[in-house]
Length: 299
Image (cartoon, rainbow, N blue to C red; front, side):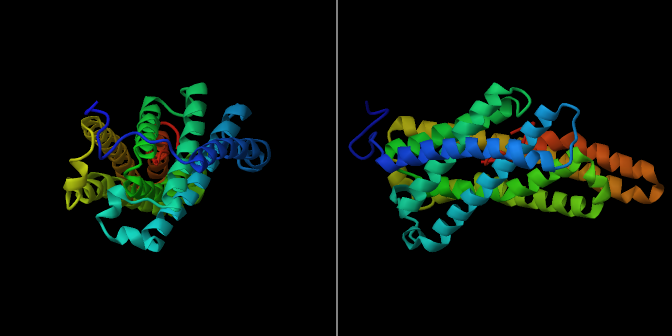
């Protein structure tokens, strides 16, 4: 049992409000999807001949954006307003009502979203989306049941800051508005690249391990062996996905910049910009869906 539990860290039953928040979040996100599908998506520009598929994509992106804003707001509140976490020694063992609710709320979103992706596969995302969602769910469940690492997971939710930029890019590309609002599209693309780099590459590849290893080794070494291996595997998987998506975003940005530089040559440059950005849009936007996906809207 030393692999799964010890005197310092063992599986606990979460508080009742954790389950209520998780279930409530799953139901609310599903209801929000239905609301967007029925009343909001029909008001937006139509891109596909298949109205059902287009409404489904739009609604899914809208729900993703709503989750990103709330998840990010809770994470910022914890980082700024929860003074107990200014002491780095609390980053693994500390918790609060807000950190717990934040993780349970995001967990509910990922439960909602993974069943949508699986049901409509591959329209709402392909295997990288499923892998990302599974890793987030497994990581959040481990935190909730082992009752450690809440602040680290809340820090991970800061990566949602890149999601709105990714979703705006997808919408402009898919509706053909990228040509009409080329300046907005270009600025949003640059901001998306910057935000993704800061929030998902810098945060995941450097800040998380630095936070864990610098001054946290004493607590981390007391974890059951399973949890240590489990955390390392999840960290490696999430980092690999983020690096893959950042590469796709960078290649898309390079194509857009080349198109803008060639724009003075005529409409061919504009066409190159549109096709280059659109070709990468689906994989880019889905990568950020998740908290962080590959073909739909990121963590």
